[in-house]
Each structure stands twice: as C-alpha cells, then as structure tokens.
Image 1 (cartoon, rainbow over the protein chains, first blue to last red):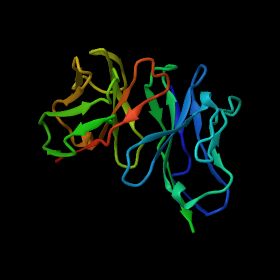
Image 2: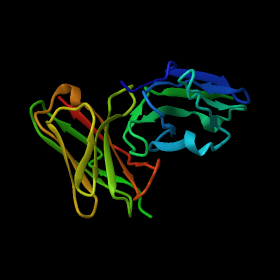
Image 3: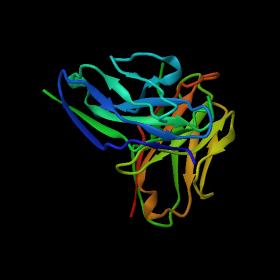
Image 4: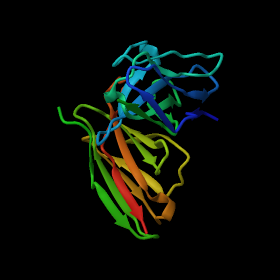
Length: 110
Length: 113
C-alpha cells in the first residue's frame, strides 16, 4: 500500500544551522512526491515538487529511489521557516490524489 | 483571483446527525478534492470530483458522499456522524491540465459530540 512516513513529529534547530526533514515512502511504481508547508494561521500550500527540481525559499529535496526517500533540506535555517511540513505522494501520477505523511513541526530558534 | 473558500468555518454536530460542508474552487479550476485531517495527523484523501463526476475515492465509507456543481463548487456530505468524524475537512482545487498543482482552502472544523 502507498504510504508516507515522516519519522520526526517535532524538529528544533537554531537559526543559521542546516535543516533536514525526513520523508520515506512506500509505492510500487514511479512516485510523484511533494512537500507542503503550513505557516501559522495560513492554509496548506505547496512548497516544492520533485519533478520540478526547484529550490523554493532555499529548500531542496532529492528523490532517492534506492532508499525510497525524499528528504527536505536547507543549508541555513531562518526563523520564518518555522512551520508544519508535510511530505505527500500522488496515488496516480498527475491525479492530485495525495497521500500525506503525519507532518513535522519545525521550530527555528533565534 | 479568488482563492479556495470553504463554509462554514466551524461546525458542531451530535452523533447520528448529517452534515454538509461547502467549497468554492478557485476561479477557473475544474477539479476539487476533499481531505480529512484528524488532530495531529496529515490530511487523508476522501474523494475527488472532476467535471461533476466522482473521479477517485480514498478509504472512506459510503456515508461520505459529495457533489460538484456546474460552476465547479462542491459539497461534502457525511451521514450518520460518528465521534471519529471530528476533524478538519480540507477542500483543494486544481486547474485544467493542472499537473501537480493543487490549492487548498482554509478548512472546516467539524466537532461531533
């Protein structure tokens, strides 16, 4: 069955330190993966998607099919990065029927 | 451009009752998906509507049903409410050919007593 696992519910780092939010998936096929973010009092929004190979707000994520992972990384954390982060997998490519992980609450300490 | 809107914001019902939640998709979007987000969990896919037809369903019982209207707005109906239905219900819309693009509404918080 398709599944997304985010092993850390909470992650706290200091400003300027590197950040890595972990995401592992279970999917038989070629996965389509996303990172969504929810800032305080805002709605869920797309941060990045693996097929675009984008860097948004300094974040990148690389799909590792061998390790079935899609970890989100940023070399230097900023206080405005504090938010809830969700990794998601599309059940069918392009269908936008997403399976989400439990989420990781990231707190950046000054 | 107006974003995805949902109504009501909050709702309290008792077990066994029925509820209807509403979603207005973003202008020009013809696909609407519904998700249930229990406290402390990630969103779970309920179903998706495309051009007024159900276009895929997650692992939810038939008492969860929906509609999509010609203007692409949508309703989520839940019959015979159970305590475990208490959650945030999210609606998300996608544009035509919107590969990988989904825009979420603010959600409706449903409490079942």
